[in-house]
Length: 254
Ligand SMILES: Nc1ncnc2c1ncn2[C@@H]1O[C@H](COP(=O)(O)OP(=O)(O)O)[C@@H](O)[C@H]1O
Ligand SMILES: [Mg+2]
Image (cartoon, rainbow, N blue to C red; front, side, top):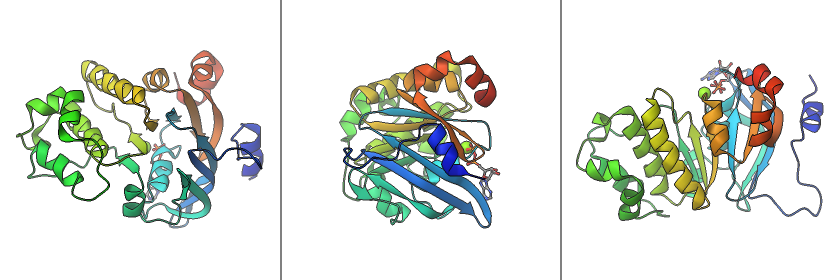
């Protein structure tokens, strides 16, 4: 299968000679779970302060792409380069990428049992480089301020999602990776989290959001990427996707 042609047709844009280097760039990513070839020659770039919605059906490879960028061992990146803010991160382990500013909020949130909300945040700040001060976090996440002494795992699903995002901001994050932040949450809580993500957007953080709630993600995002069977089939503005009924129907079922 010619993945090169797919990338060319769909406008994944490798940096041309002389072009200013992108803030984030993924070029020709190929990742595997064992022998299974999952992320199939994925290339895209992100400008600083952009929010990109990474969309596609279940099993399209969204989580695998985020995990590849965050440099988790599984799936294994076998080919391709990733740069963030001028540094190659494809050669890094997950903890090194985190130190360099990659902040993954995984689907299961991974709140640490036995620790209060505040201790979860403090733990994130044990290693340099630190990000937001606690007070700044509480200003943006009033629910977390109210529950700072409560054990993190006893929070509601929505509050745990807020804590997971806040914990990443407590580190010096350059690229925020959100994997289905609205999953399983009541609409009113989704709205609350959207409000926080909009505030973060105003502050100029660069973000990739994966969401089954494509309309909500597109309303937040500047750009959209659509993945299908491990390949990028669309790279354009979020508005283009919202207006393109065929595209939405074919790949997003909305
Ligand atoms: N740990 C794993 N081992 C083997 N295959 C996996 C693993 N995780 C995901 N996959 C496969 O990789 C493909 C992409 O999965 P994933 O990235 O989770 O998709 P999405 O997040 O878009 O739903 C699917 O076919 C899935 O079955
Ligand atoms: Mg997923």
